[in-house]
Amino acid sequence: MGQEVTLEQLLRSRDERAVRQKDWITAHPSLTLVCLTVILPGPVKRDSRSLKVANAGVDAVRAALSPVKEECLDLETGFEGYFLIEGAMDAVKEACCNIEDTHPLGRLMDLDVLRLGPDGVIPLSRSEAGLPPRRCLICDLPARECMRARNHSREELLKKIDEILYFAVNL
Image (cartoon, rainbow, N blue to C red; front, side):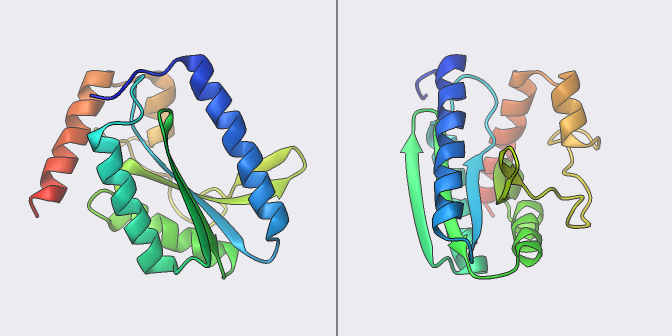
């Protein structure tokens, strides 16, 4: 089991990630930035589950997108992977969504394709790329709806995550 992190630590980590993303985009304006994080509800963001997903995500991004530069950070607040890709943003987003939708552990990966907006870094949404929203791990509703409404307990979600990991490892 990993170490619990506080909300303050998570917020600080999110701010630091946004700064790092902006720096990467600014330094490499002709390339597309992809950021990989792991979906893991609750106060533990780094454990054996998250590391399996992170490693699988890195391998999938390398295989599908051939990054020209990358950096992986194994933080207590969660794994962060940064990948610079030669290619149009829409095509990169489509490839990332394909990983999320078809890889055995893709449901547990968050692959954001990022750009600079007037208020900082913003991800290219699935709808902007003409793709349907991600579905909840447990039911068929859009994931954002279930997350906002807290339709499922952390225990339910972690049980489903463990099932996905078990299935993926035992393919």
